[in-house]
Image 1 (cartoon, rainbow, N blue to C red):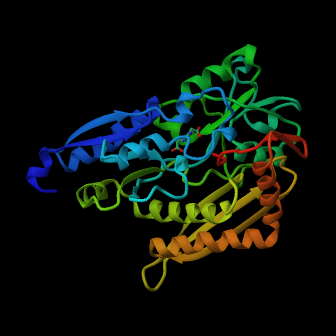
Image 2: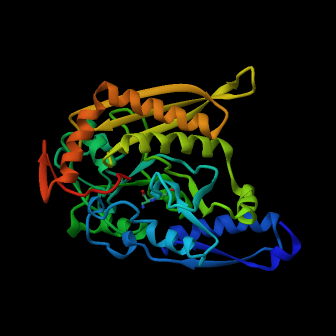
Length: 355
Ligand SMILES: NCc1[nH]cc(CCC(=O)O)c1CC(=O)O
């Protein structure tokens, strides 16, 4: 980065939540350590998902966490955006680029029990039938209905602090809520975490959202000055894993947004050509949790193109093994007016991507 360009203020677009602002602080600290002369300006922008705290997420449509930020980027009001990668739709507007993915925080989902229960429960399997789980994510609800059919699910909106307050509010009746470990770790709420959920969790686990735990930095595609600066915070293994996960979601999304979970793991050991093998596990679950298609693939990945190809291949395998029927069912809901009952679940049309 040249000396004169260090004088230009670099404007960073972000959502307004405390988590989003904390994430920008983390990025600025890393960039400043390498570019001590760089000057930054933080531009918090409210998105639809922030403004509308009442409507259940599935009714807010795609881009609910990103549209207003991307408009500011395209209009050159900001120079790059710090997103939670999982909030980014699988395609970006013309002229924009997912320029950098950072080192992943813990990608798992976690269980937070209501404070009114004290230490009574240690894990989801301890909850009696009829207990109420708070989540706005169809991905989380669908997977947990599969393993814990006796639990009830209720929407919970708001930022981390708001959802923790609602979880503890006796009048709202939540017994627990499900959040991402990454947000809680970044905001120092680790002490509230009762259980981490992953593919191998005893009693039934959860595959996380595509991109969960990583930050996606979006830039204008020809802005070499910013792109080269952001190399400082780029993490190649996470970027490749994120590209494979996003490719899977993009392929499955064909005509709809589906409750899918993923888990990517870099396997130990290097191949002869120095490449490494990436394992990707994924699941597509019906909204009532009663039908599902699970799959996994391992492939050497040494480029974003190979990561993209791995995601596509697994998505096609899931579709070929029956995921298409689940997708079509959800598609029908998307197309139809009003609410439709799918198994035991009443779903509203025009649902957004499951997070
Ligand atoms: N819009 C919800 C959202 N987007 C990113 C995170 C967590 C942080 C991350 O995944 O990096 C969350 C909160 C949650 O799912 O609990």
